[in-house]
Image (tube, rainbow, N blue to C red; front, side, top):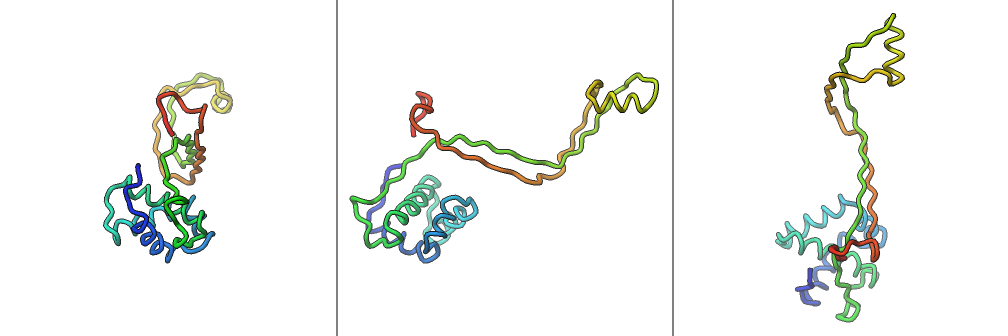
Length: 158
């Protein structure tokens, strides 16, 4: 998104946002924590009336980067040092751990229950039918990596 806001407006907005996010540690948390990002987006919606998601995302990215550039002193923000963020391309890997119940049904031949159970545990018997019940997501992990330059496909732009 192109910056369509005046420097004066951004300085005022950033100063007001700095009342809540006012030190380097809070900014670093804001930069990486989706919950904190959503808190800032909520402020932009509820207090400032922003409704366009692209504008809210741009203001968030601009606020964080410009805060770091001027160490929170937005009086030092000028047209020359104003960071104008652009969208980037990221590769995202999400790993989820779930509690799940699998009911597998099959008919198997063997001399004893122990032999059949052993064959099942060792993968020698495949289920004829399977029912899956997803119970609860117990944990997740997200890995995000920015894709830069030569790793981008021709139809992608950063």
